[in-house]
Length: 374
Image 1 (cartoon, rainbow, N blue to C red):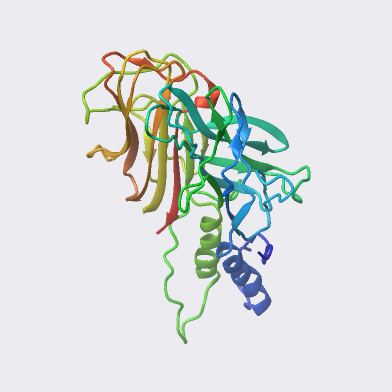
Image 2 (image 1 turned 90 degrees about the horizontal axis):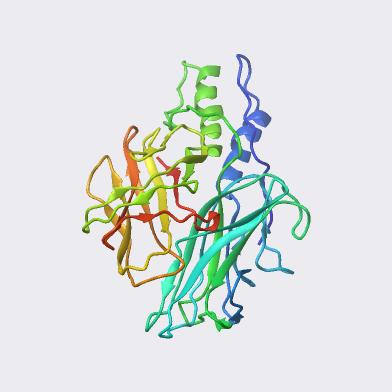
C-alpha cells in the first residue's frame, strides 16, 4: 500500500482580497486528499495457530488486507504504529477452538502506547463458554494516539490482545470465513474547533455577485475543521459500588457511566440516567458494553441502545450459568440521530438479584459515539 499522500490540513482564515490558486490547492485539495484517504488498517490471523492460556497475550495478525498509511509492523505483526495523530476506532474478534464441557473465560482487548506511556489491557465483554459453541470474544474501543513515528520505533501503537482462560494452549479458528482479525480507523484529530454546524455545502455565487471571505471561512475553513474533528465521545464506568438490578426481559436499566474519556462536543451525561445527546444531526456509530462481576446464579444478560427513551434495540442477549470470573455483553449500531436526541446504553439481567459492575479495570463498561456523516 502507498503511504500518506497529503499532510493533515490546517485551513487558513480568509480575509478580503484576491483568492490565489495555491491557497485553494493547499486548503481544498490537500483536505480532500487526506479526508478521503484517512489511516485505515485491517489485519488477520489465518494460520489457526496455538494461543497460550492464562494471560492477555498479543494477537499476531500477519495478514494485511489493507494498510494505506503503512502502520502495520511486519516484524511484530500484532502492532499498528500511528502514522497520523488522532483518535482511532478499533475492533477485534478472536474466535477460539474450544467446545469442552468445562466452563472457562475468554476475552479480546487492546493494549499499546499513548503519548509515550504504556497502557494496560482494556477488554471487551467477558465471555464464559462451555459445551458445543466455540467462543468468539470481541472488543471495540476508541483509542487516542499522539506520538507518530516509524513502525517498530518509539511512537504510539495499538496492539490487539486475547485471553484464553482454559488450562492449556488452544488453537485459533481458521476457516473460510471465521478467523481472528483486528481493524483500526482514524476518526478525528486529538484537538480542534468545536461547536461548528454540519457543513451545508451551499452553491457558489454567480457573477455579478462575488465570493466573500465569510463564505470561504464558513464553507472551506469550517468545513475542513468540522470533518477533521467531528463529534466523538467515550464514557466509562469507574469501578465503584453500582449494581445492575434483576429484571424480566425486555425490561432493562440505563447503564451507569461515571467518567468521560473524550467528549469534544459536550454530548455525554453521566449518572444513572445518562447517555449521549447528539450535538448535531447525522449518522453515528454507537457502541456500548458492560461487564458484571462473578455471580453464582444462572440467567441471561443483554445489552441494547435506546434513542429518546424509545424501544430498546438489543445487541447481545446471552444465556449464562454460574460463573466465577464475571460476564458481559455488547451492542453496536449505526444510528441516524437528530440534534438533541439522547441515546442510552441499556442493560438487562434476570438472575434474580442485583449484580455489581465488574470492579477490574480490564473489564471496562463503556459507551462510544462517533459522528460518521451528515
